[in-house]
Image (cartoon, rainbow, N blue to C red):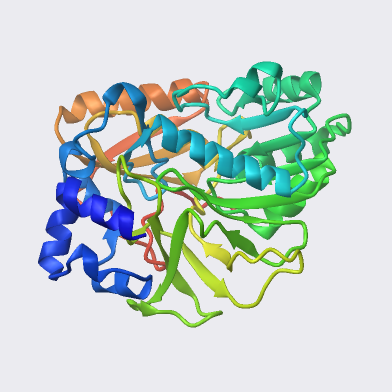
Length: 394
């Protein structure tokens, strides 16, 4: 921890200012408790600074990627990751998958948006080991099902909302020939209802991961069911209630410090989720600390005029690539109609509105009416979050 703290202070202007304003010297921080002398950083804080203030200046632009967070709060952030950091993230996911039963020579389908740039492959992937087969959620549902039928993967990983839609379709159509051994989910909150549907539809156990673009895999479930195992060798997790350290079992904000992100450090960063710190050890015998996630990334599904249900991640990823949008919220009060509220930045409002409408119609096959409204502010809901997709259809 001391190494990343000193690196951030010496090489990243944002953290140098943060430390100096707090009157903290990097040498003062030797434990997780010492980190409490620093204020918590949020996505909104980082969005106020240019890339040069957030990224180490010696970073070779040819060897890092810029990934945009999904914007579940309506405020996407560019996260910069080096090739080596990306490999480490993949290794942590591989460790998680293998702990839940994955074998290196098995086929794994990834049901996601597939937007990240590839930063290289490991040599053993050329032999078909740990090969990830893409199934894009932007494709028609029939195409996704046909891809899975052809692939017959032993493992499937994807967004809970996307897998729930697939699972419901399999149940409704009586499809029983897509039977992986293991399902894993991530990038969104997995509710118990969704877990049951996914498990029923695919006939396999479901293990969730708590991950974020800023940190990669933060915590994960094992078959013993003792909670989420925190990857404490790579990420320090704090639980704060009203700014103070929370008691075990108390509802708390999750605050994370990455121990390996030297390209773009994240120290005491709040990814916007609510969780609970657990005590004891899991029956599996692993010594990693335990937690559970209870709130966050809980955007709603939307319903099109033709009755089709669409994952909120489709809308979030469609809107996040449009320049001139500082924040957005999509509200649905009737099937086939989306009200898009936008806090605008630079650029023509008419041009932004036209692009929003065109992109949503393209993503949703014209089965939607789009109403764009520009506002000065998008208010938080009762949970304290700014949900970007809100469906009032029940």
